[in-house]
Length: 68
Image 1: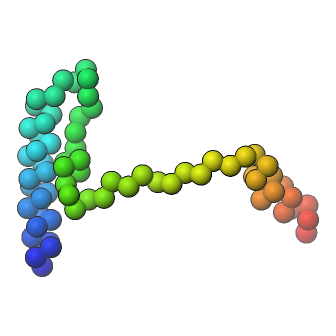
Image 2 (image 1 turned 45 degrees about the horizontal axis):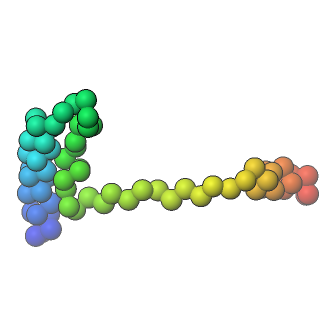
């Protein structure tokens, strides 16, 4: 229950911070900020993307069909 109260308080605070930041930003130099940019309870994790060669796709999709 205490965590829910702090989350609710941060929802309110983050909204006000985003509004203040957007009022004082230069629209030509930066993007509009969202409340999530200021909210400490929300995670900002980027998805992990692994680059592989085309031969991996061939092994998975083409060679699997012809093999059995």
